Length: 353
Image (cartoon, rainbow, N blue to C red; front, top):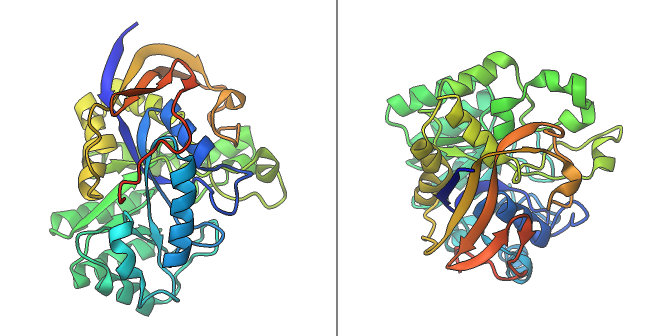
C-alpha cells in the first residue's frame, strides 16, 4: 500500500440538483459523494428548478446548502435574458456567472448575442464568466470576453477544434481558461454500444477518439479538471428521452491518477488542475488543515450501487480503477474514513459567506 497525502480537491463544476430535483441528488448526498471522491470544495451550477438567477432564488438555495452540505461549497449564478440589468449586483455572493449557449439540461439558455455582450460588460472583472459553449459558440464567448476585457472560462471542452482554438487564443494573450472532464478524457461515442444510448447521453456529447486524443495531448492548455457531476436516476437514463449527464465525483480521482501513470502529467500538475488553479481562478479561500489520504495502489471495481451519490450508477460501471480515497480531513476534523462519511449535514462552509 502506498498512501499519498494530497490537498483537498476542488471541483468547479457540479450539479447537486437542489432545489427542484432532489430525487436525483441533493446537497446531503452530493457532498457525501464529493468527500468520498476526495473533494473538499465544490462549486454548484444554477440550472435548478427554479433557475438561480436573482436574489430570491439565490438566497433560497444558499439556505438549503447551509442546512445540508457536508463539504465546502460555492454557487454559480445563472445568466438569462431577464437578469441582464441585475445579475452583476449578486457577484459578491457567488463564484461565477454561468452562461448556457448550447443545448443543456434545464431552463437556462442564452440565444441572444446582445444579452451575452451586456452580461459580459456588466459582470465584475474579478469574477469569472463560465460558458457552456460548443463549436462556434466557443469562438463567440472568447471574442466577446476579449472585447469587454473579462475572464471567460470555457466549461467541459470536448473537441479537438475547441481546444486548438483556446490554445491559439491563449497564445494571443486573451484571458481565457478551460476545463475538461474525466469522461471526455476516457470515453468516446462508441461507449454507447456497450452501456446503451441513454446511459451514454451527456452534454457536450462524447466525441470521437481523435478528439479524446487531442485533449490528452493538450494538457498544458487545460487549466482545470472538473467532473460536471450531473446525476439522473437509472429510470430516467433508460427512458425514451434520457436526460444528459453523468455522476462523476467518486470516480474522478483515480482517472486523474491514471493520466499520471500514463506519463501525461505529473502529480504536481494534477494538483495544479484540481486544487491550485481552481482556487486562483475562482478566488476561493484556503482550507487550513485540509487534506486527503489516497491509497494510490489500491485496485477497486466500480459499482454504482455502492456509491454515495443518490443516482447509484456510473458510466464506468464494472471498470477496475486504481487509487482510492482512504481518509479526508477538513479544518482538522476527520470527515471521511474508509468508505464512511463522518461529516454531518450542514457542516460545510459557503466560500462566499
